[in-house]
Length: 372
Image 1 (cartoon, rainbow, N blue to C red):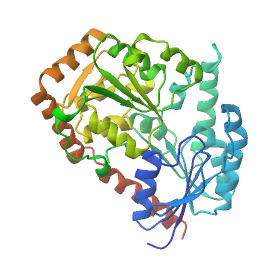
Image 2: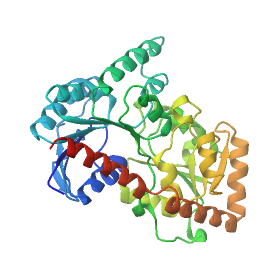
Image 3: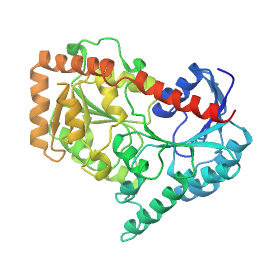
Image 4: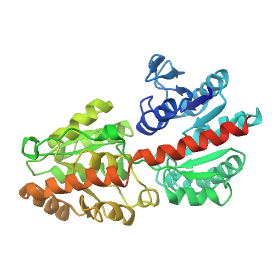
């Protein structure tokens, strides 16, 4: 492979984001590409695992500053790197991608979520404006996406939406990495703790998870960034908060330690249009770690969790049913262990990143050939 320069860029995600850094960038480096990553996380520039990381943010920034000033800095730095292929990960960077295309660059858009649907559940948007903003965003997204070189999505559902107007669209799912497989931890040596690792907000079930451990002897290991200060203040007032071990943002190494000591992984997301069709990274990480899962009863998730017998799907608002399943797992360790083993086996055989990695590299090779 001749040295093809690749620039991934994001204004939102941290540098060691699982999908961006550990899956995509590392896959490309191992396939012979020269990879840079532009971020806005406020940390120092560095080279990690052969990936050159450049930070453009030198101070904390609110949402408005991030979506204007920082986006502009991301664009300037990305352009300065003079890459052969650009790959971006945030909807607010659509204007940047359009500018790059106007300069004749090859650009990939990685769509992590169904943004038009996601806008409708944003708590920070003014009431009564969400439908209009969603419509405006959809118009801009369609205009830009038609002009890009490739669209990558996390689910088939999102892929089908883009395929209507951009035939060069591929679904590359957030399946598990081999590095997610932990050394076996005996069930009896684990603590009686539940865990959730990921973004923390209302629609991802933070109130339900805290309420779940209220009045029990169970601890909840809660790791991730809380969406805003008001939500953080509200959840700390909940009675169940005394059963919460809040860990904030954790590194990949720290996340693995949480998975080692916890007995059950939680995914009690609300049934929004975005979540119903999603395939969260944490689902496959819980499975790879050998944790039985308690997840929301969505059809897409039932097809994975219940078919592979690696957990239970329940109503995310039914505390009684959730506690029933938790107590069943705790009182039946042999079944809980088998569910954990089933999850590990399913990730290894069916939901491995290795398959998705080949699709990613294939896209890049085809785009590189077109530049000759």
